[in-house]
Amino acid sequence: MSIYYVCRIAVAPLRKEPSDRAEIVSQLLFGDRVAVLEKNEKWCLVRTNHDNYEGWMDPKQLEQVTALQYNDEQSYKYISALTFDNRLVDYAGTTYYLSPGSTLPFYQEGYCYIGEQRFEVKTEPIIPHPSEFAAKVEETAKFFLNSPYLWGGRTFFGIDCSGFTQMVYKLLGIALHRDASQQVEQGQLVDFLASAKLGDLAFFDNEEGKITHVGLMLSNDKIIHSSGKVRIDPIDNQGIYNIELDRYTHKLRLVKRFV
Image (cartoon, rainbow, N blue to C red; front, side):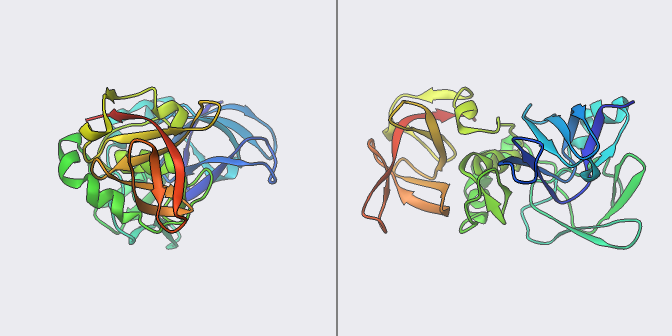
């Protein structure tokens, strides 16, 4: 039996345990690939292809593919664009509305395919490229402004801090790990906040020194991040200052550069 699957719905929750009441640790978007590690009648434990993240999900939200289809990297380069109107139509004529950055497997001449299932792509997809990072990162990040904070979220309907940075970077052709504590292991250290530039990521820790938050620098004194909602706040060497609350909300640990 194949262990390879692709998410066939717009967004699917990944849970910490095999229970509908369990914490949502992340989300799959349409076209995300997973390997199934364990399976029972109602739940399967999966590991994502794009960031090696594990969680439990409903197998009915997945479509089985062959190992050849799963590993054909060139066939997963198209993604849904930075727009609110990304639509697919399936064989039955029903519509799927996708969040930006969803993968469109085997896209060709207006259609994408998951296994034997064909979907008509109604909006123009993109192939992101890191060479466009500097020109597009601010617009891409600000697209998500006012999206509500959602633990484990990766869409404009709800997104957490590291989901936000991961999706912005994906839309610009750069792969990041899932959690802030994993993303901080990537990139190159920026020595001083004054040297930070548009697109750098700033990381923040708690009293125990654990990285618990990440945001994207708009300049060396402004940051866009998901906290309550995706918002823009001032930042200095101490951390993020929330003007509405009139206090610092996140303590700066370090800044990393990825491009």
